[in-house]
Image (cartoon, rainbow, N blue to C red):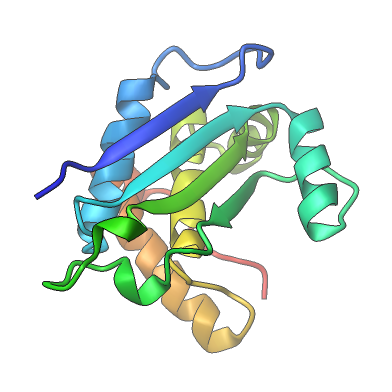
Length: 172
């Protein structure tokens, strides 16, 4: 079986990155989340940590919203969600799941607002982005409830007991 691979890009322009947020740590918590979600080890993901300007540009280009945001997910459209989960018939041609892009400055602001650590907020945003890559959404009440439950489980897998203290509630 192929080994899961996570590529991490931390923009050199981003200031004030928590020294605990290393490539290795991001790979470990991503692996914990994907394992919990039964995503095959042959699947890979990319994570980018960037600044508000880049997030604003991406948000405008892809969603038509001219402001920064905390996290964006870009699923690999050539990788149908039905092939992402572990199955006997998983095919190698669908290895790349997609990319999660996180604004470090927005994560910093939100961590202060929530009273949690910067790394906890990064894990929260990464978990949220991973769920979107796998086809979860929170547009309807039922989807929101299902995604919040999955997100709580992911935070526990990623952060252990400290993940349980993070509130997971999406706007209705």
